[in-house]
Structures are given as structure tokens and as C-alpha cells.
Image 1 (cartoon, rainbow, N blue to C red):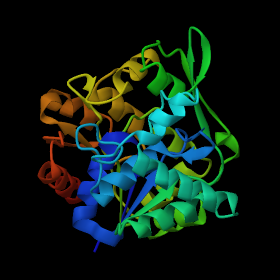
Image 2: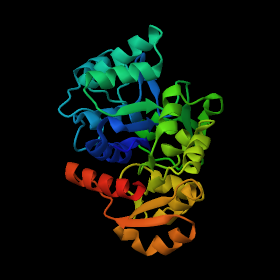
Image 3: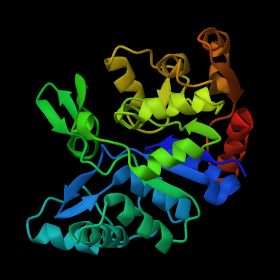
Image 4: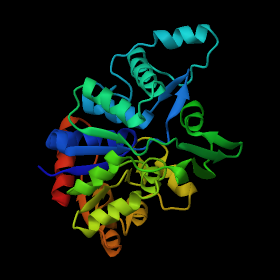
Length: 311
């Protein structure tokens, strides 16, 4: 079975990864963004990894796409009683993951190993790999100065205009041996429909990561990117506004321009079919299809079409 590496972060990336796992099982490796990681109440929280984790385990909160379905908030309520900040909500079952992972890391385990332990415990077939074991922190510049990503994304509900982005620690980060091995053995690479600036961007900008992708392409491995923008809008999150603020076109074509020279195939929604000729002019083969993943069937269908494009 074809070995595929997908780069992902957020709900859209998690949904496609779940669809890919349905076809590939343990032949799938998901490399996830860790720039969103943060420490809350003394615990290491990894939002992008955990969103992919819960989706691939089939326990995600269906309405939101993140968190665990049916989770309770008893601990958070009690933390509020003690005067702790509770704007970054963590469910009780979700907290169990953060406690177990943090304990392993504090005992000397690599973040990658702690994450792989959690995946094995949940019976997940695919591997979900942090892009690096080194600390990276996404920061957003607003009119009030630089904000930690979760402060902007969760506490301030993505309301402030984004005036800039930076990724503390990224220049000193390195891909893990597991990530390098995944690219060396990949037979297909998929860039998921995740925010290209703060989800996929940090993954690709880990020093050496783009070179791993290009080395794979040089030996004939196809790369497909899936647009997170449909009809000029992001289905979830602030990707459309971030693209516009950064001077990019908030459209499927605008995203395709970011991946030109790195990808071979660009998958876009039927709503953006008119952009296919312009995308082809960038040197990308456009694949037009329904990219909205409303349920498990839609996830598997889109994944099959993406795999067909890189097969």
C-alpha cells in the first residue's frame, strides 16, 4: 500500500487525515504543526496534534471538530473557583491526555515518543508526528503588540486584525528522525486543507523540511495540496483574513501561488472551478472536486480523490 505523508494542522487537516487513514491505515504518517502548542495549568497542550489525534481515534467532538465528544468540564469549573483563568477550556478527558503526556516529557521522554504512546493507547493505525521536538511558538502581532497564538485565537476569538506573524524558536528547530524517515520512504505527499500561514507554514519552515519535500519530488514522489479556501472564505478559522492581511489573495488561486514550485497537484473546490486555468498556468495540475467534508463518507471520498491524484 502507498506510503503517504500529509502535513496538517487544525480541523480541516484532521478531517482529511482521518479520511486518508481510512484508506491507508498504518501506511499514513501525519506531520503536525507544533507552533500552536502552549502550557496551560502546568500542562503541555498540543492543539493541532490533539485535534488530529481525536479525529483519527474517532472520538472528536463532532460539532466543533476538536476536543472529545461528550466531554465534561468539571475540572475547569473548579479551577475557576480557585481563581484560575478558564478561557482556554479543557475537557476532563482531554486533561487526562495533557497530564499523561506532560508527565512523560518531564520524566525525560521526547515529545514525539510521548505522542506516539498516546496514539498507541487509543489504537490509532496511522502515525502522528510532531514536526519537531524543539520548542516553537507562533505569535501574532496586533495593534496591541505581539500575542501568544492561543491568546489571539481562543481568548480574543481571532477578532484583532493580524499585522504580522513570527515563529519563536523555528530557526533553531530540526525535524525529528521519524519525520526524516517518513519523507525518505514516502510514495506520496499531501498538504492538507490547513491554514497555509500558521498551520502548514511552520511545518514547511522547519529548517530542512522543504528540502525533504523537494528531495522526495526529485525521486518522483508526487505532492498534492488541497485548498482550505472555498469561494474566498475559510470554512473554519481565520485563514482567509490572515491571507488578506499578509498581502495574499484570499482565494484558492492565492493559496495555489503559495504552493507553486513545491506541489505538483492542487485540489480545489467546485465553487472555484473558474480558477483552474490560472492554477494550471502556475505549473500545478488542478483537480476540481467537492472538498467539503461534512461526514466520514465525505472525508473518505475526498481522501480517495487526493490519493488518486498522487497515485
